[in-house]
Every structure is written in structure tokens, then in C-alpha cells.
Amino acid sequence: MTAPSNVSEQLHVTFPQIKRRLLSLKSTLPHTLHFPDPPESTTTFLILFHGLGDHDVPYAGFAKNLNLPGVLGISVRGTSVLPAALMGTDVPGYHFGDDLTVDPNTGDIADDSGFEKARKLVMEKLITEVLIEKCGWEMRDIMFFGFGQGGSLALGLAAALDTTSRVTDVTEGENTTAAGNKTFKGLISLGGPLPQSMVSTVTNRRKSRTSVLVCQLDEDAVDAVKQEFDDVKVVQWKRRQLSMPIDRDEVLPLMQFFADKLRNEF
Image (cartoon, rainbow, N blue to C red):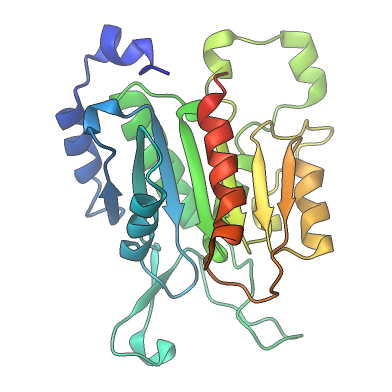
């Protein structure tokens, strides 16, 4: 797979330019980068979202450990701060929600307290402004990995990407250039359900064509994802606890999913 033609023919974006343009976002959307070896081999971007109360650095390490060929990892820090006192630690954590609300049934922090701030920063600044408009890539060159709340954000972004109704789609037809920006290359949500606040209200809308793998979700959460996505793979580990993968059996289906997405060109 090679870099998209509009990178070399239209924008002439070099790798140092891509790096500078990503780093220019650090003050607006803090993140940590992991570069493939060599960096110029980049053909795909993997955007990583951490879970509630975590931060970006460990997930850049996860991208490094995955060692996916030609994949530049962008580990994004949560857009809101969790105070250290609330975390019970000496350092603050971060989250992607618009607010912190408590589920009255469980007493836990609710899965979906809105993601509009995070959506705007990721979609409008990082993806649209930097990766697409300034660097010449397309949505289909982007994959996501999210844990917990981060997985919910990833699912919500993909579900909302193309909300065209089936009727409009058939009537107006497809534009091949636009098609590259109607689907992401793929995403993995580890323990993060689809947030209903990010699901389109367009009637008779078609399902998202982004391929997804969901892991450690209950049956109702899986059904909600299948209502919005055409291609859904479901993985359940032997253990019930939710954490990052701890052994080969747990990480293998994730690696296989990523490898399959990197092999397949649209």
C-alpha cells in the first residue's frame, strides 16, 4: 500500500511536515505520537483513546508494542481533567466526556455524558483540518483503538461519519472521491459501548460501513453496535474483568483485525 496520490501530487507533504502539523495541535489537543520505522513508511494513522481517568502516554506505548507496519500512532489525551483528589492519586487523570454524571442505578460514572467537545476537537481539528486538508490523507487511512470511554468515543465518531439516508444515497449516487471520506479503515472498542448521544437521528439512515471489533461488551451493548454498523466482530475473553490485554490469547484477535484492515485496500 502506498501513500495517497494527493499527498505527493497535490500537497507535496513530506514526513517532517506531517510531524510539524501534528505537533502544532499539542496545545489544543494534547497527544503523544509513535512513529513507524522508518517514519516515511507511514500509510495509516492509528488514533488511540484511553479510558476514564487515564492519559495518553501509556497508549502510545501500546501502539509501539503493536508494532504495526507503516502505522503512525496518535494517542490522544482526554479533553477534560479529572482532579487528583477524585482519582485518589497525586496526579490528575483525563476523560473525554462533556461532563461527569453518575448512573443512579449503579452509582458509577455514566458511560455516556456527551462527547461533543471531544468530537469537535478530534474530527474537526485533528482529522479534517490536519490529516485531510493539510496533509492530504483520507478517512479510510485512519483506524481507531479505544479502551472503555475511549472505545465509546471511537464508535460514536464512526457511527456519525456518514449519516446519509438510503433514499438519498440511491437517488444521488456515489462520488468516488467523497467515498474515501465516508468510512474509516477500522476500529476496536475494548469495553466501550456505543454512546447513544452520538447516534444520528436521521430516519432510514444506512449503517456505517466502518468495520469494527468490539471486545468485552454485554449482549445489549453488542446489539446496539450491530444496529449502526454493517461489519461487527465480537470478541469475549475467558475472564470477565475489563483491562488492557494481558496475554497472547487476548491480544491475538486484535492483531488479526488490524492486520486484516492493513491488507485490504478500499
